[in-house]
Amino acid sequence: MAGGEVRTREGFMKEALALARKGLGRTAPNPPVGCVIVRRGRIVGRGWHRMAGKEHAEVAALADARGAARGADAYITLEPCRHTGRTPPCTRALIEAGVRRVFVSVGDPDPRTRGGGFRLLRSADIEVVRGICADEGAELLAGFAHWVKTGAPMFHLKLAASLDGRIASHSGASKWISSVASRRIVQEMRNCADAVLVGIGTVLADDPRLTCRVRGGQNPCRIVLDPRLRTPTDARVLTGAGRLVIVCGSTAPAAKRRRLEAAGAEVIAAGRPRYASWPQLAQVLGEKGMHEVLVEGGAAVAASLLRAQMVNSMTIFYNPRLIGGDGIPLVGPLGVRTPKQALRLETVSVEHSGDDLVWRGRPAKR
Image (cartoon, one colour):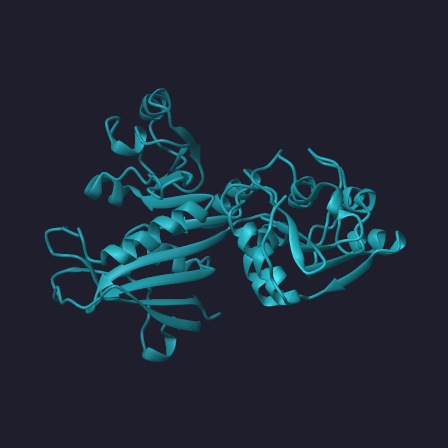
C-alpha cells in the first residue's frame, strides 16, 4: 500500500498529473492518465496507464489501494471511461470498489465517453467534482484531444540555433550549437513523443540514430521524409532501436524501396514526387494512432511545415554564439515580404537552459 501525504485537492491532482506524464509517448492511441486514491487525507493508492492494452490508471490505483479504496476519494486526470475496449470500463471498477467521491481534472473528448462517465458515476451515488487543475490537465491531454477532433497528430517543431539564427556553419557543421542542458531537454522531449521526424538532409548530413537516450526511456517511432529514397542502407537510423518509417514520394524507385524494407524500414508513400504532403502524412500517422510528433528536421523541413500551417507548437533553443551570414539559416524561405507578414509566436515563454535561451510558443494563425 502506497504512503505519503498531500493536503489539498490541487496537491492530490498534481500527484495524479505527475503519474499521468509517465505514460506520455507510450499509451497511444489511448490518452495518458494518472490516478491516486485518497483516504483520510493520505494517498493509499497510485496508478497510471502504462501502455495501450494494459490496465488503466484507475484500475492500477485501486489495486494498489486494495480494500482501503472503499469510502475513499479518487483523483483522476481524465473522466473515467464507460466503454469496453481492450479493457473493461473504469467507471465500473470505481463503482465496484465503493469509492465515495471522484475528483477529475478534465472531461474526456472521446464521444464514446464524453460526459457519460460522469453521469454513470452520479447514477451510482458517487459525488463527482470536475475542473481540479483543469489547465494542467488540458495541456497534458492536448495531443489526444487534437487526435480525437482531427484524426491527426499534433506537430511540435524543435529548432536550435546560434544567436544570429544559424543551425550550422557554411560547411554544414552543427555539433554542437546548443548546450548540454538543452540536449538533455530534447532527449526528454523524444521520451514523451510518439514519433520524431527529420528530413533526408539531416540523415545525410548528421547520420543520426534518432533514439532516446534517457535512462529508462522509450524510443519513439523514427520518421524520415525521403521523397526519392536516398537513405543509405548503412545509415545509423536503420540500425537504431525502435520502429522506423520512411516517407517517400509517389514516384520513388521500387528497387530502393525494396532494399530499405529489407533493411527493416517501413516505407510509405505520402505526397508528390519531390516532397511530402503534410495533410496526407498527418492522416496516415493519425491512422497509426499517433498523438504527438516531434519534428527535428533542418531548415527545409521546418519551412515546409510552417508554410503548410501544420505546426501546433514550437521550442527554439538559442545559444549565445555567432556563426555569421554564410551559415545555414534556422528556417528556409517562407515567402515573407514585409515584417507585418512575418510568422509570429504567441503564448510565448522564455527560460534558461545552460547558456541557452529557450523560447516556447505556438504560431499565431495567419
